[in-house]
Amino acid sequence: MKTLPDASVDLLIADPPYNLGKNFGNNIDLRERDAYTGFCRDWLAEATRVIRPDGSIYVFMGVRFIARLYLMLEEDFGLHPQGWITWHYTQGMGRKRGFSPRHEDILWFSPAERPPFNLDDVRIPQKYFRKRNNMAGANPGDVWQFSHVHYCAEEREPHPTQKPEALIARIVRASSRPGELVLDPFVGSGTTARVAKALGRDYLGFDINPDYVALTEARLARPFTGFDSEDPRAGRVSRDQPGEDRQADLI
Image (cartoon, rainbow, N blue to C red; front, side, top):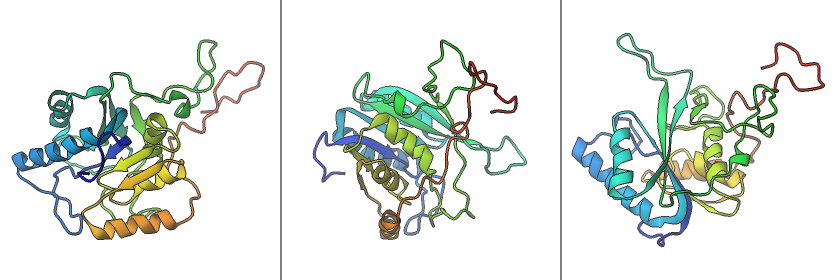
């Protein structure tokens, strides 16, 4: 990121390593706490430098460092918190002691107090018809349900932390417009680049593992036929539509 001009990025989506000891091919994600904190501070300093004054930064993070990351973004870098999003998934690691984890978190920050937000681009169908409801769709809220990209799925890439495309698409639609630049400084399996390309945004990504760069380039070269996931509410039909005989079993 040090090679990029100041204030040149409209949307930055970061899925950094969570410091959990995962094997990313040419490196193991495991540092001492202070070293990991310093690593986060270094890349966040560049992220806040390259983002536009009204741009948005979204950061995925696990439970061990999410609170620390929030304070760094707000207190150390002076960004304005816009949301703490919970990605809920129905499948996860099983445990016999304690509760099995079923979510990850996404922080949304911006240099601006009120950055652009394209609500109409991310609305989901209403569950019920009501005159006061906006029947163009509802705000999806800050708890998002998307399934993992399963290891046996056709869309699965050889990467340990691949994110579902529809989840990234919601971020891209909400906080950028066609033709704007989306940056992923931990490009990994290439999900952000693929989604940005499909939605008509410019995109840029880096990775320290050249194998992941090659994987992303190959993924971008394949024809786009649709996203590998969706919000399960996206296809529902509102109940109680006036003047229509609705079936009781509609979602």
